[in-house]
Length: 354
Image 1: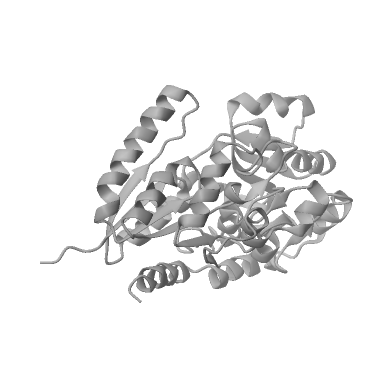
Image 2: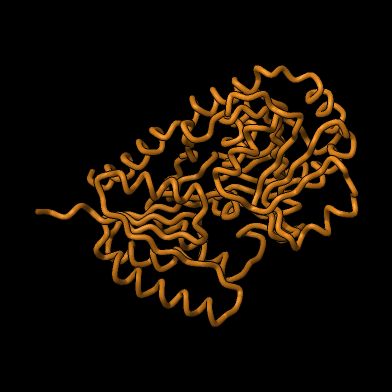
């Protein structure tokens, strides 16, 4: 009996959207081999991990029909290198960090002209195909450049790149992310993995706190902030502010289900998964007008710019029709069904046979 073709996938931290792709690929007509490259800051662990990845790639890539890397970084260099040597079709999925440069806060793969950036450029030039979760990660977001001087877009950094780029957004399980059916509370929620000051700034927590100060009748909740950053919140002494660490999917869904509004203040983020999850749970979205956020929200919520944003945002919160929550859910269900990503994987696999 012939074995199913092998797909080798590399990634760093196993985020929810990566787990979703692992589940999708596992359900398809293929075998799946995972190579997890845990990020390490100390050099000894870093070198140990890279050596481990080298031997894993050397073993599994020649046996593979396709290789996939979630994000472009050190962890996919050996994957792409051996895929090129052994003529295996390769895919890099870009999420955001690997297509931006914000020198103000030293954020983005292209923020420093170092070895890491050179490897990333080589990876982009030598993989078979690139997926971006939103087209702004391919061609740039002019609004974020105007407002925050954030340079973005793979083609901005590599104008002569010949590798084909395809927009393939992440997708969501609407049977899990859904409303409880109960009346929502007067809560404005924001969610993120906020482990350092840089991410705190990227997520727009400063705007979130400004809004909380002016809207004392609403409860404001931050989920995902680390204990080390609580000192940034406590000086504000806001009685209407709650903060919680990263939690399970089940608990996160409960936060979405009880919150009337969801706030996405990211200065740069290709396609925020938490925004889509919240909208599926019928939260009314409020988001910054950058990258993929406007395409996600459409006309179902409120979009703001970084100047003169608080007063109209407050007016929207006070007057928003509750039907916007249902419209938000319907928009995500229609725009990002799981079948769309399954079809994209099938198309990628099929193209290698042509």
